[in-house]
Image (cartoon, rainbow over all chains, first blue to last red; front, side):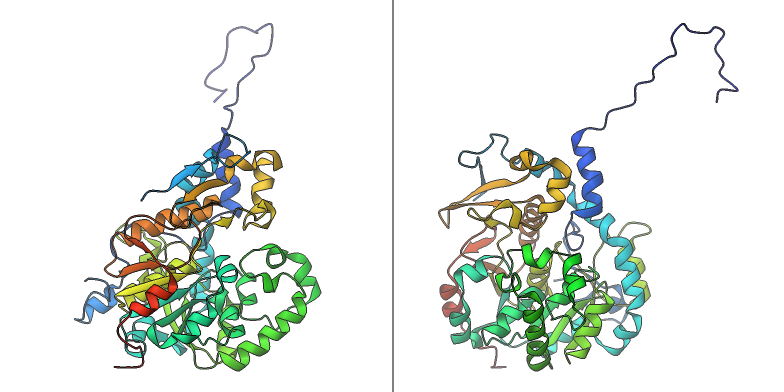
Length: 66
Length: 357
């Protein structure tokens, strides 16, 4: 990038680039990602069971297409 | 009745704000945590899955009776100790037991009709079955069982009690059906087989199966097993199995607290070391959420994971065809589609014995 964009003067003080500060929630999520969380996922769907194999065999689409 | 979020007596006025924020993120956080290990374990379990049965076969094995009683390992199980009532009326309901309360059942002379296990943790879950390879070094590496409030029996004399549990499970678990998730660790699979349990396999849902590149679909294509929405934890999974696989019309719950008693120190909660590492000891009141339970007439508190479990459970209960009776007599699981009742009321109001076809 600095091969394309070059300044045409030398600033008196070197510029300070502000890094975005991570908010607390993001930091939590990053940590929690590693160590906290449930035993397994929860999927927000209406059906409790997904079983296309059973459906292909001509039976009910698993136990839960009631 | 929606829960009332209460400020803890004499505690910080922040009242779990951060805890609620974290709970709202746990769906994606948990998926990230389990997706790799879940897939890896499902691959590693391929041979064991071929040796076992499909969970749908349980519909024939445990079809008698309209009622099921889920026994999970929340702290109320030990505080209320419903063992005698369950023993007296055990013919009234199919007993669907989380692996974490199997030891409590055996110690109290209760034989589960079905055990459910799902957490892919490589070492901890085996402890609920008695770990034949446990030694002092392993104990030192993980203080979870010495610290947890799920089963106080596990908090002391850990090596001796582990040996007792190995014997107890070897003696009593033979022939008991276990609904085992394909993501279970190799150690749990080996232990369940070694104890002579009858393995019925299923996949937990990981993500929306209608999405392109869904992990749920990928694992289903690999092993052909039905995928079940497990609700984030083994207690909820027991309830889903009772409702959707066994097709029970009424499902009672004991030990499904999703929270802690007010006199439990924060240090005895499930994720205490992790939470302290994240926020420090002086900000704990921002993470733990206090809830008034008007049915029990008491305040309980909860952590982000349990709060997420509760919200997920309420969402699933709204879709269920069964009646859900919460007979836990404590905790934070109440709201629409959950009937709060005593265990006695649930068991005595059933009409059909599970032993009658």
